[in-house]
Length: 210
Image (cartoon, rainbow, N blue to C red):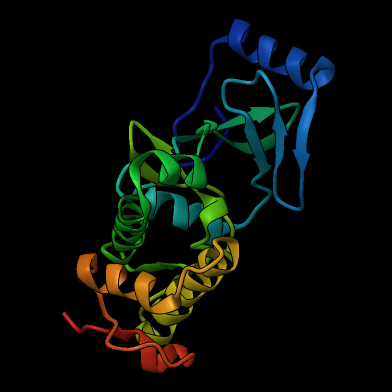
């Protein structure tokens, strides 16, 4: 037992041993402040939990409820870790196959799934939306900087999340105008309305009270 209340735990020793072998011998694809990614590891993203109760609460509130990557917790060599499945279908690859409207609609549904449970996904970025069978899924959400409670200022939390997404996708796609992205967000969102593009996030994205 890890002492992590309510978390999914993997206890099969052969799987744990194989994971450790891959970590020890495999190729590390990416390393960052909160994650390491190893090619070949079933749960390819691992993040130390340490003692951050806020991250644990985010996990309890969103895992299995919001559109987030499958995650579980294990203890390896005395260190508690979150492990997340790697979702390989990238945002722009799916966009070229299914179209711009499809990926924006799926991104909106990811954000809405967080908002339905009281959070704004502040890392709402094409890089953080992956796809499985055409469905958008959030990755890297277990970080206190990636999500924000909607309780305090829902308009600002929602506005800055959608503004980040709009800014990044229009920077990445030559000729794509913010107004076109906002029209799709307005079309599919139940939580914000987007009437016009001004460049002012609070003017562009208004949170709809329930």
